[in-house]
Amino acid sequence: MPKISVIIPTRNRAYVLKRAVESVIHQTFQDIEIIIVDDASTDGTEKIVDTFQDKRILYLKHEEMRGASAARNTGIGIARGEYIAFLDSDDLWVKDKL
Image 1: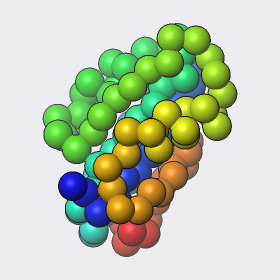
Image 2 (image 1 turned 90 degrees about the horizontal axis):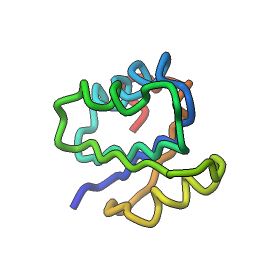
Image 3 (image 1 turned 180 degrees about the vertical axis):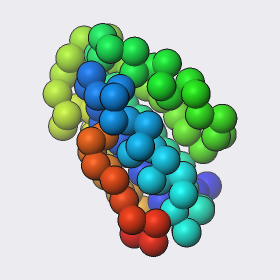
Image 4 (image 1 turned 30 degrees about the vertical axis):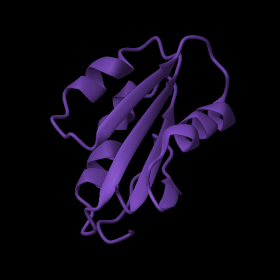
């Protein structure tokens, strides 16, 4: 089980999601899982997620828009980590945040 579950809620932010996910992948602390919860995007978000070849990434998609809070709660519901960290899909982390 990972030490930290990183939950990234997103909706129609394919244009910035890759940078956000990369900022998590490149953390100095690596005992993580990355849970991306797509809140019914229509902009190809899933294609961006598919470009990552990282087994720590889990992608879930809401079939209808439920809001960022619901996306966070979906992520929490499947998180396996001892700790939970949130990252908005239009944000970046410095490499030693965790």
